[in-house]
View 1 (spheres, chains in turn brown, purple, cyan, blue):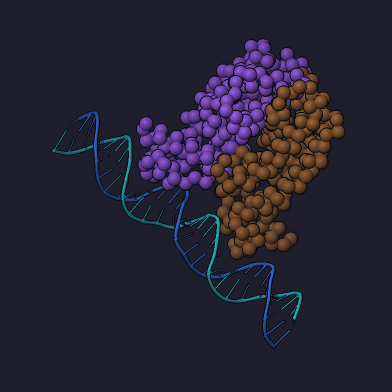
View 2 (cartoon, chains in turn red, cyan, green, purple):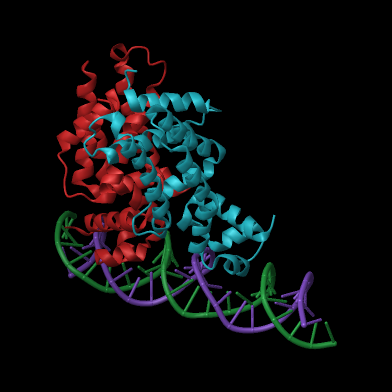
Length: 190
Length: 190
DNA sequence: ATCTGTATATACCGATTGGTATAATGAACT
DNA sequence: AGTTCATTATACCAATCGGTATATACAGAT
C-alpha cells in the first residue's frame, strides 16, 4: 500500500478511536510509519486529511443510498432498500459508520462539523425525498416530511448505536431491516 | 454568582460550542474572568470539570425522566409523558441537550464518552423498563425491548437534531409530543 | 494578636500542538 | 550527463496544552 493510502487509513482509525481533536498529527504518521512532511505533502493540513477521509470512504455510500432510495411507487419496498443500505454500510465498516455519526453530533463550531455537514445535509435530503415522492400513497402528511425523515434515520441510527454498544456477534441484515421498517411504518403494535 | 458556578457555566458553553478537546483550560478561565488555580481548586482537573457539568446539569433530568416514565398500565400515556420530558429539557436547555448528545456519540476511547456512559446507560434502562412493564399490553414483543427503546429514543433525538438544525422559532411541546408518540406507536399511516 | 483554612493570583513546568524550511533521495526524461 | 520533479526525512518553529509550586489575601476562631 502506498504512503498516502496508509496515512489515510491510520488517521481514520485513530480519529474513530480517540476523536479528531484528541489525535495529534505526529501520532498519525508514527502509526503509518512515516513523517509529518509526507502527510502535509499529500493532504496540506490536518483538516484536509479529515475531508479526504470523508470523500474517499463515505461519499461512495451516499451514491449507493441515492440509488437504493429510488421510489417506484412501493413505499415499504423503498424504505426497506434504503434501510438495508444503512445496515450494510454499518456492518461492513463499523468504524466509518460510527465515526461519521460522531461527526454529525460534534460541536457546531468545530471543524469536524464543518467537514461533515454537506454529507449530513445530502443524506437528509435523500430521505426527505422519499416521503415527498410518496405523498400520493401516504395521504395528507401535511408537511411532516422532515419529521418522517428524521424519524426514519433516528430509528436506524439508534438501533445501530445500541447494537454496537452491546456488541452482539452478528445479525441477519434482511430480518433487522424488515423489523425496523415495520416498526417505522406500522408502529410497535405490528 | 460565585466563581465556581461561573466557571462551570462558562465551561459548559465552550464545550458545547467547540467540543471538549478543542477548548483549553486557559480559555475557560479567561471567559470566567478568573485564573487556572481557581479552576483546579474546585474541580481538580479538566475531566473533573466535565463530570461536574453532567452531575450538576444533566442528573436532574434523569430524575425527572424516571418519574415521568412510571408505568400505570397506559402505554400511550406513559410514552407521551416520557417524550414530553425530553422535549422540555431540549427546549429549556438546548445547549445542554445537544452537548450530551455529542458526548454519547463521541469516540469510545475519549474521556468524553467515559464521562457520559453511565448517564447514557441509565437513560436507556429507563426507556427499556417501560416496554418491559408494558409487555402485557403489547403482546409478545419477543425480546425486542431494546429495539423499541432505541427506536423511541431515536425518533425523539433525531427530530430534535433537525429541529435545531433548521432553527424554527418555537414549537408546541404537547402537539409535537403527541405526533412523535403517535408515529412511534402506530407508524406513519396514522 | 495569632492561628487556621478557604480562596485566589503570579509565574512557571515539561510535553505536545499543527506546521514548515531545507535538503536529500531516486526515478524519468532530455 | 544533466535536468526535472515527485517524494521523503531531519530538524526546527512559536504557540498552546494540562497542570502546579509558591505566595498572598482575607475571614473566622482562639
